[in-house]
Image (cartoon, rainbow, N blue to C red):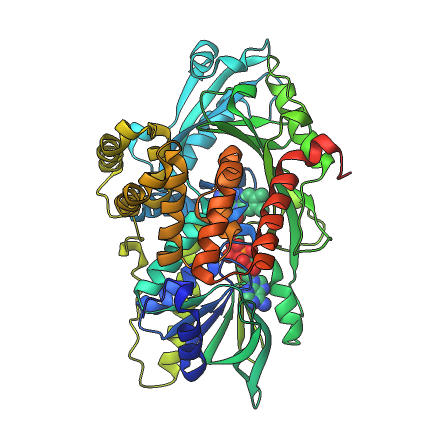
Length: 558
Ligand code: FAD
């Protein structure tokens, strides 16, 4: 049975209901996906449930960097910086197409956060902690050299810049590839399935009650261990388990804006000062530049986190302040995303001061919850959880599970390239196949960054569909991606495709408008949708486009 396609959902659900698992993981963000992969690869019979789509929570709303978190050095979080810093190189090795090196420029200005000496020292320590190799280690640039890298920084206060190594990624794609790799190791992973309550035997949690939102059915999953990796929802589940005592989550909101690259034409990624003492990123990505993030306490609805006008104004003001030749306004915003950091509360600390360390909570009924942490550190978070499960198994005599985590050697789906050069060669080969039919290098670059070595299967399908779209080959490409997503990535809604499998809604919003009808039609054929369901999907995508693109222009959100 193909466990990677919702075409088989009935059979997957039936198998889940009739089985007893070692572990059920609640939450299909990067943390839950990482735990499912680690557990399954160590021999635990594993199932994961996600109430929406995989990466539908925070894991599609980050800055999309695999990074050590330079600013945590300022807070002396040395162990955290070392751990996530080292993880960067590992995650790059596991998916070189998806986690690629990207140099970051840190401009130094007269009244900036960091002085020249402290930046030089800080970046040096950052490199050492992360084990960055010599050729990639930080260099300090003069004002002239900084301007050569980024002419838009021209301003009288500029004194130079630090230039150091980071990695870029797509958070949702990383999550889905980890989910697929877990499935390769026999895990069952269900999207659109919510854990609505727990099942107990005497005083121990022995499973979950689930609601399936595709067939609208409820069912039970039985498991020896229940792990909640529900991100911002972790305390909601602890509450349901009557175990919300002691440490709690502290949610902070982070917003990113997307503007057309020509409106903010930076040549390279920059980490720069905001007048209030914080720092934010501006990252060019093909046709767009994105800017973020804010960091503010959040008490609103966790299921509907919106970019508000004041968030957008904060980021726009920050850009206009640091780049005198740029004058962005709300009208320039193409799209945006807003997410919640599931941090651990510490009395007296502001949003930006809270630690990004992860924490594990174990309740009296043995519900294990994990929260905090970073996208970058997902593998180590998973290792800590599965080590805990292995220890519990050890206490229970006949433990046949692998004791040691080996996810540092499990290549993610689509990631079988020896290095970044091989990824580039592969892009070239694919481009040779399609250039005569009006597909650009940009499209191939995006395809391979998203799907890696799986891209040639998508290109094969593209040629099958091309006859129907001779005048608009990009529609054939979009439909081929969708076909792949339905067959291999548990896609079941248009938003799954446009947001979490391809990022088109954020990075190429025009293509969403062009492809919308075709994508909904193919989904309708596959999943037997009636006219009403098709209309609902169209409404949902239109709402996303509207929320993303027009909301500021209309001044709807205050
Ligand atoms: P989530 O991704 O939120 O996943 C939890 C999942 O659980 C959700 O999908 C939710 O739907 C599901 N769920 C909840 N309740 C239930 C239930 N009852 N049943 C079933 N499913 C349920 N980290 C980095 O390393 N690099 C960065 O550049 C970076 N930038 C960031 C920028 C911002 C603005 C933010 C907010 C965070 C950033 N982070 C970054 C941190 C990183 O994004 C998070 O640490 C990470 O995504 C959290 O993943 P998670 O799986 O724990 O939570």
